[in-house]
Length: 420
Image 1 (tube, rainbow, N blue to C red):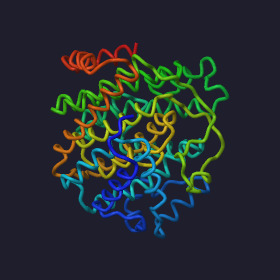
Image 2 (tube, rainbow, N blue to C red):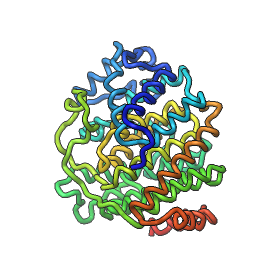
Image 3 (cartoon, helix red, strand yellow):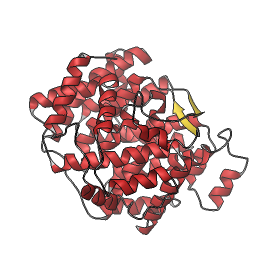
């Protein structure tokens, strides 16, 4: 893993960044802000049988909660696993890009809620089902029914007015159905005819049906498509350098596919002392693991952060899904499973905000920030290619230029292969 800062220097950069954002270790949540966020995330009427999460929802809207354990977890993850984030933060401090804002404070509150939801869904299958069913009901209230792909697509585009966000939303949803269906089985395999029965009963759509017929390694191809969706978007919008990282991440999967399997395990951030995590582990359910290296995971996160800056609004909702402890400080093999849950939650939250006709723009310097971050990421992409797929920078760029010479055509070729 490429490093340009010592641990001591990284800790100093993290603390300076927190101060620049107006955050400190003694900060607590504001129940009034939490009440507004719970309402916006369509959780005000959510009911759960999970006693720990029931208490969580009551506590956050009635009394301040300490943020220090979450901040400490994030700090551990960034400093030990993500040198490119430290490198960008160092540059951002020198450029004076970081500053205080009401949206930073709001984002921290979103992060607190999202971490609890993600961790609980990772570790409690019953809670996973409860929350997924709740959000499916909320979608239907907005005339979105994911069992009908075409109508859901058109309705979601009409709400968001964004092609990329809609495609991303509809491509992550099947992964959650697959996760839900498989994780509670003894051997992660459906009985013969069960997937067909679900499809005929209109409980799943055609894409979900095809996924349930395949083993977990098939998800690698869906992951490649998800990465390329964003890579093509940023490339066409002029963020060419960061798209190089998207290409390396996807091609790494093709050339050096990770081993995929279901394991019985709890999924919590590493080296944490927060008792919350132990209290939400229901029992060891099957969890989908993808045995990526930490270097691949780190590049994915920092590439995605730069992409978010370059292309998306509502950063107070979207950025937390990459910074929460269950993502930034997880075991590398747990990353994709936890990321799927975190992303699915976030996409729902963004969609609900758009249904409410709200939009929060990003910082004024976000284009400059994204391009600078893309340059940092390029170095890590070249290093990853050299280490894991044994390609030098010239070989990587040759393949990258070939793919992006016809980006839409090549993306749809991957989609067609996936669907065949």
